[in-house]
Image (cartoon, rainbow, N blue to C red):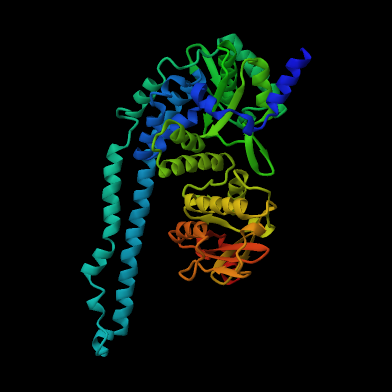
Length: 489
């Protein structure tokens, strides 16, 4: 290799994102989509789904989208599982609502029974329970569940079914008609699998995080081994860039695993250096290889293509990516969202914290939670964002304490002096008391957590900013043997 070629490869591999001409990338680049992005179109609410399709079909963009043959195979084989999973969720929610309805009536039956024992109606001149606790009021109070069930039934009718026509599949196939890779012959596949075995043993990206996957997709006389899916996608991308002398290639993925992304001090900095070295070496004409997580792609697409991509769409896409990562890391193994706090906090910190994340052992020792993970993830991401924006760059520390009725989760970061108010002990009691006009981020966190029954309190001093989340003890899943001690602490 000539010296100047070597230097060029080295500099491109270790270039900064700031040196990338994103205007040129979006004007000329080829955008490659991973299978998880296409499958997430089934999972997105209708409005968000329409936003995604609107981006992919835009007149200034649709000619530069492409998928590898491996992506098409994974999409076609896995779409029925995704559709089925969506249908199952309706039954799960309906079951929870039925339990809620039964519990609701049981509470009032018990209340009426206890009041009857007191004989207050006969023995008290003023108290008349029947004025309030009657059939009309009880039925009226539960009517929201009936409305929820009606809406659920309405939505389920619209939801695709494995036994009915899939309305999304033809849209996706039409979008990518003539824009699918040729894939590899049987001999090349065998060579890639042999190479993959060696790569995975040495944790060479991409795909080594999928080493535990079993099975294969069979198409004709060829076997597409599932654990090598990412590697096959990667090889197709390299071949595409090399054979067509492409200048810019962007991969859009919902996969946040570390066998794609380069991270330093908890911050995501772009594709791994091994990937950049490999693709720049094999496709010398390529100036840029870049990765977009789905939600970030939608943000940028809205700006460049002048499309109104709703914030709710971006949040939904971000949530699906987080769920995918949580599933991979076994953060939420339970059917109804049981999860540990420490890995959730770690996951949120990896995507944007400036500085080091320090999680005290008291957080790791907490029992699993059984609440809406979406809400908590969104709130912690806001906390991380605020710490990076207003802190001094040293990071964020997290500690927990078990109080009488709740677990107090405290986030602390050192203040950036330029952002500190002249009031050295500025207290934000976002439980309905005074809030400083600059604390809009706190309001967002408060509103998110309030809906799930959690309280928030924050204190700002000259040196430190503390935010405390009060999580009710009943939100934790505790072993029966340890439950009494946990509740009494």
